[in-house]
Length: 443
Image 1: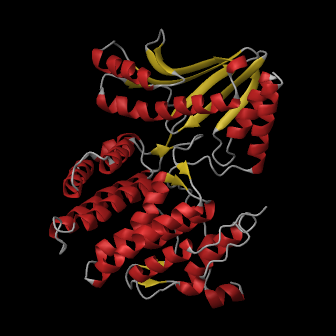
Image 2 (image 1 turned 120 degrees about the vertical axis):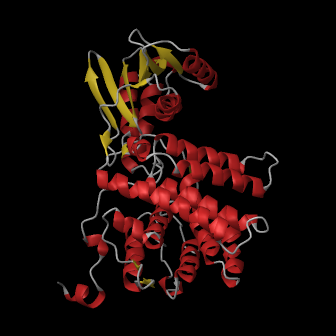
Image 3 (image 1 turned 45 degrees about the vertical axis):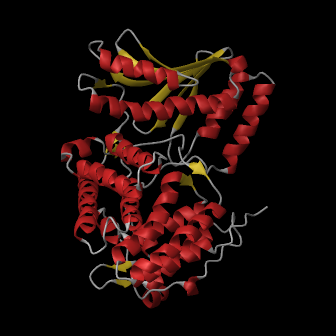
């Protein structure tokens, strides 16, 4: 043990940690080499060197960490495959045209229900279409002449194919039991221990929130705004920490959409709707959850890229609301508000990388028991003594700042502003620290 470790404790970053991914993938964090490939692809398209344009385009899409895109020469053209969640998109291109296909499901007989669904889906697609081959495999197909296949068109078309196929396969299989999976050989199941930890987290967290709503001291009809914070923070937390697929992911997205719909329903009514949906989710059998838990690679993000100012505005508008609940003896509601802010940003936006890494650290601290169940060795918070580890937390924040210093040279977190006397005060001070970061980028 070094003298530094003896005096300050060993950094958890140095300990071996499980390779588990969290949150929604974003393609907003590309390297400089990716953007260079994009510029070359545009140049080659203008010069009508279409094959070279395609090669550079797929280099732009490739994320080395994800290993999400592959491209190779074949028969005078190129073949490619890219991954999006549970689905794989394969295709071929030459100097004249490009074609991409994502297999969704297989069927042994043509039935009105899912055939009508496919027809309805076709009306919503802008670049691609659902089709069926001679083996009764339903696929989403996109093709274009090279002359009309600019990198901009390819990006949005392949994103449509990939994201729609990723969502529809699990939903169709769940709804129409006669359908069978297609092309799932690339999927890798999570370890049983990880599935169990995630399943238990989903069920216990839903039960905990519903119990607080029904048995807690806050009147759910008199203070529906506080109950909404509690429910929404749960939805966003489950989405980020569990990283669900299939019906669970769609359910979280659907109830999020319903809550924010301007449909004339009161907050009380919307809270009741969320409670009902979450209760049904918790009552699903374990096997159904386990079937949706597998490793995925992604190529396209679905979150909206935003700058630090959006995060600042969100913190400024909602964080002060926790004061009243804390002062009046509703700690669960008060704690839900900073967690709601963090979860909302991670659910809806591709925020700057330092913000994303700091918000992940926030979850590691506030949900330490869950990370322990997943096998992480972290010492940010002691569940038994309710004590926060000042040194470990400060060290972790410093490491994030140092990691991002080249891109954000003025990133200097005000560690002295953090409060460690309890989790509520820490959470408030942590978000204020994030809010006050100088995120000016280097030239």
